[in-house]
Length: 322
Image (cartoon, rainbow, N blue to C red):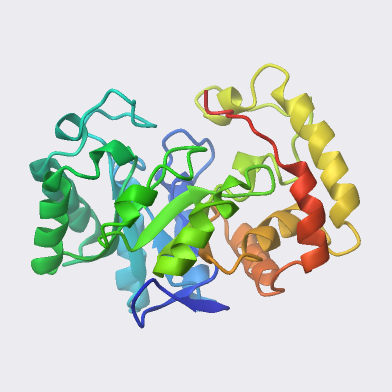
């Protein structure tokens, strides 16, 4: 497994991380705990050491599974979590204040809950699950970060940037308290490469690239006839004529990548790791089969510079989360 150094440390993390939203079951249909644990163990056995979870993923269920597997494996993993806004907003509304969203006691309380779920004494990387840079000058969040690090309960702190707002975190990054940004980055949404990536390279801040497959849109498997069960958030994500739009755009991308890759999934994953600023890409994986396929893909390394340049033409400014 390819590895990179995390932020301003000597800690090594795998270039492929494990996105753990899907194994929490909530908002996803079809996750099975036994299969999830098989996939998690297979990940560890194959050199994956970064596992990205959150307190709200299945109301702690995802964290509990990750914690169980870590203990069973006997390995010391790099485990991340996220603190939800106290208002449970995704993304944070512009009018929301830090006092309403992330008061100091809420930051600490949520971290304590995650530690219980994980059966751990510390979290490697704790993250704000949403953010608004206008909160940066408020000292309350900084006091919580200092205390959690001082008490040994958090090693690193980061921000999971709001959907499609890659620059909404740079101001906080200038405080020196942010070790990483988690951001949507894929062939459709390439905006992080414009300003966020150069800032992070200059300041040695890690990037965790989430949603590399556009919630399934970049797998090549979405057609107008694709059906999602009620309760699966993708039924909303791909509502109305969005499946048709996806299919038309992915067909064009495939014509660009087919000579260098064997599938759209391969093209999408290798695209994300083709950027030096990206420390780890964290696709959601619920089966051992998907995990092993993704490991094989990542280990092929970056796409050619020529193909990366040509893929710039496929940027797509839209927000399917609305």
